Image 1 (cartoon, rainbow, N blue to C red):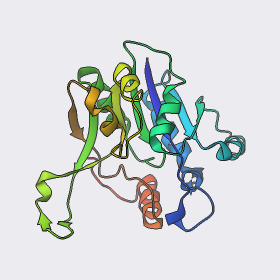
Image 2: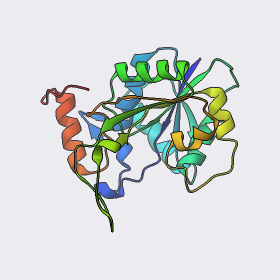
Image 3: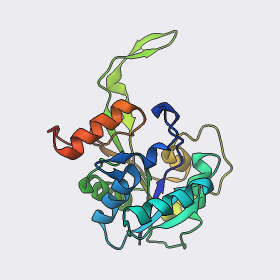
Length: 226
């Protein structure tokens, strides 16, 4: 069985408002609902686990009632770190030797079903499937000068893994080196692949990202996904 752990623990400080960014509205619907809808479009049978801080869960349920949002998800408590949040989500999943898990940022609502399909398919073939996009800006290493941007990629989500890999990886103690799920799982994956991500699969962090996302959802920007 496929599982999606959608992590939504942001406070939205860079947005300059009091409402956590995952609850801000795009086209009349909270960002997080757009994200969940896209995963449900991928598969009606997908087990979706939403990881939210405890103090945001009542507000989430209130939003679901307000928007008549009845997509089935299970709720896990957010942790102090992303590592702990994902680990809490994993605790809701029964061990399954054939299971595949995708972890996705709740504030990346613009991904396509095609990207989800390719990530899950990659995880069935390899032990790790990560979407990446090229770096287009010049990179500068402080104190050392410019570096070759062709040697680097920007990492996106969903990052997908066999459940057996995830369970082993998230059984280890937390480390400051864990910057994403790939860094947690790398020691337990026998093989990995990086696939083409999507330039529109942005993580909404700043007000300008909201404007970009709104234009995409309106169909006002015709940008190829790869």
